[in-house]
Image 1 (cartoon, rainbow, N blue to C red):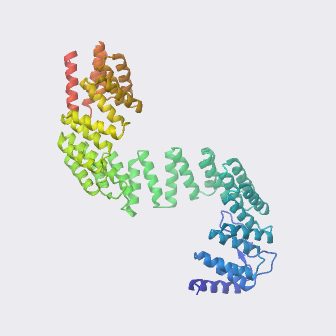
Image 2: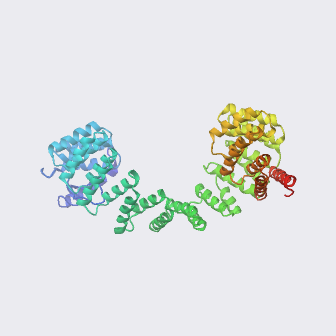
Length: 558
C-alpha cells in the first residue's frame, strides 16, 4: 500500500489538473530548476507529441511525489510505468535519467538521456544533463560539446553557461570560463548567475581582488540588500586585511539579518583587531543574550576583558567555559596568568589544581602548576608535581625539561643535567635542552668543548633565537674568544632587545676587552631592564643585586 500522504496529494493535484486548462498551474508544464533569472517553462512532454493520456500523467506525478519524499526506488518504478503508457516521450526519458542519477545508476542515466535525445535532438535540458554526466566522468571535451549545444538551442539558458564555465574552471582554464560568463552577460545583462561566477573566479581562483570587488559592488549598486554579494565582499576585505572596510560590510549584513551569530562573531573579532574593545564587547554580549552557553564567545569576551585589564570580568568569563570545551585549557592558562601577574598565587594554584582534577589529560597543567611552586621557591612541590605528570605522560619532553630546571634551581645540578639528557634521549633535536646544558656548563666553566658543540647545534636549529645566540656568545667568552663572543652577543641583543642577561654579558665582555665606556653602558641598561621588569622573581632580584655590585665595584656607582 502506498504512503497515505502521497494519495492525498495525488488526489488534490489530479483534481486541480482536471479543473484547469491544459498547461495551467498543475497542467502539462514542468518548471525548470530555480535560477537567478528564470527561463521559459518547457512543455511537460515533448511538444511534438499529443498531450499525455491520464495514466502516463498519473504515474509521472506519483513518481515526482515519491522523489520529493525520498522514496527513490518507488519513484523509479512509477516513472517506468509512465513510460510504458507513453514510450516515445523525450521528456520522460530525461526524467528517467535524473531518477537513475538519484539512485547512482550512472550507466542507466546515460542510456536514458541518449534515448531522450534520439526522440528530440533539440531537447536543450537533455543536452545539459548529458553534459553534466560527461563532466562527472571527467570527459571534458564531450561535456563542453553538450553545454555548447544547449546554449545554441537556448542562448539565454543561464544554467548551461554556468555548467560550461564550471567545466573550464575544473580544467583551471579561468580565461575561458570568464569568456563564457561574459557571453552570458551579453545575452542576459541582468544575470546574477554570471556576476556571481565572475566574482568567485576573480576572488577564489585568480586572486584578482580589485576585479572581484568591482563585480560585487556592481551587484550591490542595483541590489543594495543582496546578502550573498555583501558576504563575498566582506570575505574579500578580510582576506586583504582591510578590516575597517570589512566592518562596514558586516554592519550592513547585521542590519539585514539581525542577530545572525556568524555576523556578530565576525564583527566582534574585527572590532577586537581594530582595538575597539567596547564595540567588540557589545557584539559578543549580543550573542550571549540568545546563546548564553557559547564557550567560544565567553572565551573571546574574557580575552577582551584581559586586554583591557578588567581582570575580574575576564576571570568571570573564563570560569564559565566547561571542561569539555576546546577553549578550556586556554581559559585556565589565561586565568592563572592573571592571578600570577597580581601575585595571587594561592588562587592561581587553586585554579590549576581544580583544572587538573577536572581534566588531568593536559600535561601543560602539570607544567604550569610546577612553575607556580617554583616561583615561590617551593622546588620540592614543583618536583613532586612534575613527577606525577611524568607518570601519566612518560614521553612528554616539556615535563622532563621543567623537572631539570626545578632540580637545578633547588641546587641539584647533576640531577638537573640528567633530566636534560633524558629530554635529548626523547628528542635529540630539542634546542632548549641542548642550550640549557651548554649554557650551564659555560656558567660553571666546565666541559667547554662539549658546551660549544651543544649550543652550536641549538643555534643551527634556531638561528633567530636571541637566547641561544647569547649562550653561544657566552661559551666563546668563557673560552677567551672575545671577538666571537661580541659578534654573537650583539646579534642576541638585536633579536631579544632589553634582555637583562644579554646586556650584562655584553658588559662583561667589553670590560674584559678594556672598553669600559661600553661595559658601563651595557651594565646600566641591564640594571634598568631588571628594575622595570614587572612581577620580579627571586632570581631577578639576585641578578639585579649582581649587576649593581659590578657597577659599584668597577665604576663607583650603581
